[in-house]
Image 1 (tube, rainbow, N blue to C red):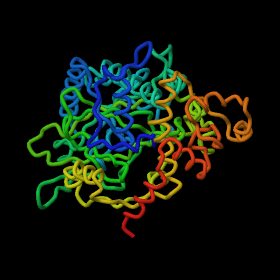
Image 2: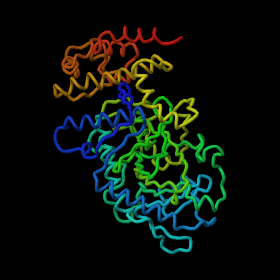
Image 3: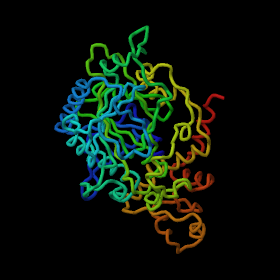
Image 4: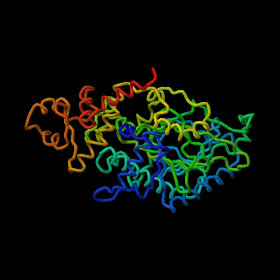
Length: 466
């Protein structure tokens, strides 16, 4: 994922699903452009916008309307099932739950489980959930295939750790579709909460402590009102659903994808705000589809290793999915704590200008550590220069093991000699993934494909404020 960080998108990437769906044969230029846009958006904003075909968009809008009516007709009952977020029950939730602290009501639709009321009667769900589950499940797998293509993984690289299509007899889906309702007025009134702002009527119900990372491969979200914030690559909160078209959904990656791609695809850090709902009888309704690994699978970096990517030791030990789901993962463990803007509204309106100023060099941020910068730049050059040369010559890049290649570069008949010559690999630099090269070798690699790189970086360093 980091290799896309060298490019700047002025706003959240938006791609059409029809252009992102893989076909047999060689990839089209349009497919490559869409995959590149998707990956750049995930790298910068940890999210992207997917435009569905009109029929699927209409289905989601109808589902949102049905969810609003479903929650509206429910009376408040303090004895309703409370969502305790028990990690051991991650693949068993189904039916109606309520989180009183968050003013959040949820109906989980999980194929293979029949939801029941507390009295044992079958619970009637919002309409259309099975069809929506099928649509968003297909969409999420198409997106996952696009990510596989970008990472040069084999086709359907994640199939073995996803649910069967269709589910077999007695199987229960690990993935889940949730219809959610935040701050339904009748529910809030019954709970007698009063967090409304004294100044402007704004209702901000989620604090910074409530930021979360989903343990999914991918999460797809469609809401009837904006309010979903995700941290961008600079640690700023960005409103990601404030400019959605009628057929758009937001997609963001989760911790399972981060683990399976050995850290190459960062998980989104997100939270929800609910603004002024005065005059709204339904609250803020959302449809949230979570593509999950199946419970009996194991997460490992084996596919990344097979594709020639460098895999850190922490990702090389397979971990059972059930263990992974029951392990605590905290934002501060993956990302340093950032100073956040005081107002989300100010951050959202300034996000475009901030990126443009950064691109034009009129604002500066704290420079990356040299080793981190080298790694990012080497990954970028591999993607933008080396891979392009290899594609044009029909060469499949298969990198060597660094220990073995130390002898290869001193031999005239080594296994990688022809490939190194064809793509102009620098002399004396082992033919391994740039991720694994020592810093001195990374410099040689960068200078070979971008002559003058060192001088340009020194110029950037001198221009940075002391």
